[in-house]
Image 1: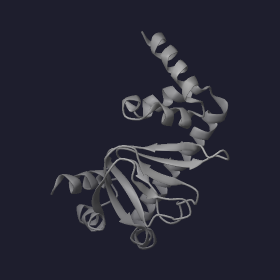
Image 2: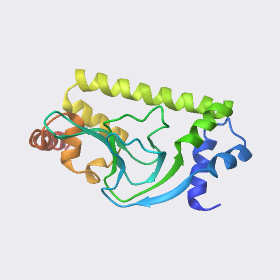
Image 3: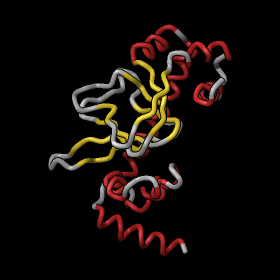
Image 4: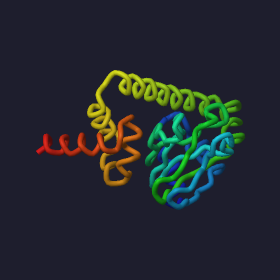
Amino acid sequence: MNFQKQFLFDYYKKYKTFTPEEIDEIIKHYEYIEIDKNQLLQKNAQLSKYTYLVIEGMLINYTYDYNGNKVVLNFIAEKYWAGGGKHYNLEGVYIQSIEPTKLFRIRNEVLENFYENNEKYAFTEVKLVRNAFKALKLRMLHYVSKPAIFNYEQLLLKFPGIEHRVSQKYIASYLGVTPQFFSKMRTKYLQNKK
């Protein structure tokens, strides 16, 4: 089994609900692709035909605010999903690579077929959706009730080393602050860490 297939096999094996034969049946529907930095996978009003699982690299979900500024909604790094089938795609949300990225993609109609015809896969999908929904609620709660520095620390815990992979303007956008404010906040944070 090559590295890419082993990655998928290990990913599904952790759920302990699938036999090796069932995992093989699932992963044969995935396609391995490599994309360049700044490649769009989903554009506004054009829903993606695919759901993606990141192997290496990073994607962002973003939209635009009323002034036309890019607003980063989420970072999607290794072992995280982008998209999630036709029911989880939203108009107005873009998916873009912010560094060269290796990923798997599966057609949404194939994914939906798995959901409808395989009880084990549907159970796993429900767990994934619950975890994603919980993470989204927690992010929104922290975004409105916690200071930017707390949210920055949470981002660093979730994605260690992200500050070396992502431009400060993207992190500032994700935190809901200006790049200038973020730069000052980060400097003070690093001084306090010493």
